[in-house]
Length: 69
Image (cartoon, rainbow, N blue to C red; front, side, top):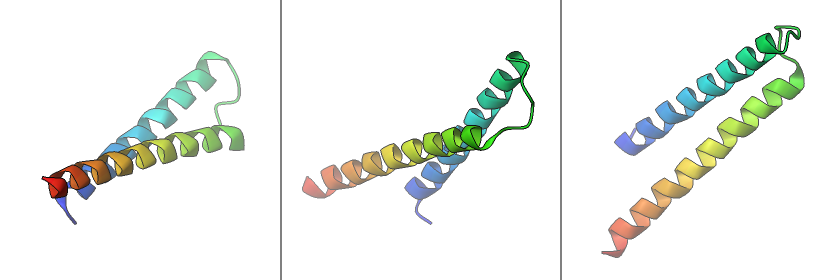
């Protein structure tokens, strides 16, 4: 696995963990049920997907610029 891909996977996992932590803290602070509902999981997955897409675009742009020079 190339080094760039390893970094991408690590960032995606960190982003997912951060999103889950934020969602749990917000759930706790709002005094709602601590178990997450499907909408919470969906918002976490959406966030992870956006991070993954932005990282992929960034990686492809870096490779394109490197090949162009």
